[in-house]
Length: 259
Ligand SMILES: Nc1ncnc2c1ncn2[C@@H]1O[C@H](COP(=O)(O)OP(=O)(O)OP(=O)(O)O)[C@@H](O)[C@H]1O
Image (cartoon, rainbow, N blue to C red; front, side, top):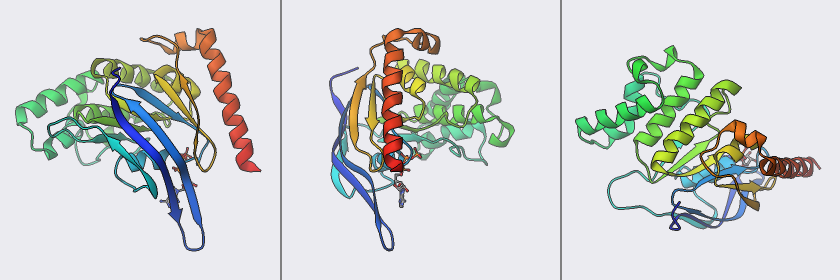
């Protein structure tokens, strides 16, 4: 990981205004993410995690505060986003889905083919490239989204619970595949998860948010060296301590939000 700051979020607040009331989704969020850093955002439901990612993706505007993403020269997209579901285009084949962003940028056909095949191989879909999403399992569809996001070669990757809808076995496989791809090109990643295990496995740093409105309450540097596997994470005493500490935080925040 470099010491260069890639994402800088400065005192950001987002308020949604409705007819007769307003909802503050996130409040005074300040965060700096280094180039190549993998950060997981963990917090109770409704604390504004998705809102924060949507702002960074340019899909919402902050009510106050600001952010910047350090962009290198060239025509790389600023960010790619991977969602929990519905991230694939149903009328395009697997290959066309992965190539979509590259084709939109009118990159040379040869380069698009090379980049697409590389990531299709990485996620184990090269033999399924002519199929349509309806012919695939949920895990395979998420693989398309991951392959497309990396193939686009964005400045940063934003991932909103990409594995939440998968069964445990598929989830473990995809987590390891994601880590394997990430370890090659060290993208800067902001990843939302409700799974403490997942956050401990994937992150360099875990950012804990309070219940609604979401404020950053703690940052945890994950002490375990890489490469990591879920078995190692679960067998490690220090990680077990972190798990309990995060679990207690979430319990307290959920109880607070119910009062
Ligand atoms: N477009 C919107 N209009 C009005 N309110 C919104 C909008 N988007 C989000 N909110 C509100 O902002 C708050 C934060 O929502 P958000 O989806 O960001 O939380 P979250 O932490 O991602 O939740 P979860 O973990 O359940 O996915 C919620 O109270 C939600 O109702």
